Image (cartoon, rainbow, N blue to C red; front, side, top):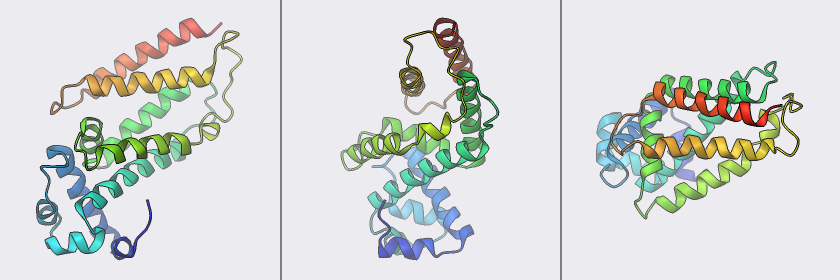
Length: 207
């Protein structure tokens, strides 16, 4: 996301104040969706005036798009910084990354609700932007670093680890979308199902 002059004002705020504004916006967008969340709501929850929201971001849409970038950065940097590169098994490394993501969601209030809401968001003002950001993030994410040192020798001949990775991503996103909008995700149930998927893949794609 381009850092505009307005966003520069926000980025120069003390970290505690930035986090309070981000946290308030994440929680409200996550709970109410894009359309039903107003700049006034966010300002009130963050303890600032409504004009300051526009001073820092220019518009509600820009704030929402900024949160998309924040979420992506938190998850990507968090996974890579905590990943155990000594774990060389393909499926165990993916499982470890999933555990880290769940942990990160718990550490950042509002992050889980916002990301869940994002999957269901259909408002035409931001829905295309969400898809564009997700596609760009997917392209930018350097899988070579994530899988550095992984042992691929156990895969059966002709099995593409890259394709297996895509299938696991599709499975994970599908699990989220299957949860009715407005209901809390059952993380334990999702992880159990994900483990079953990993085991199925392991049994069929490893020698």
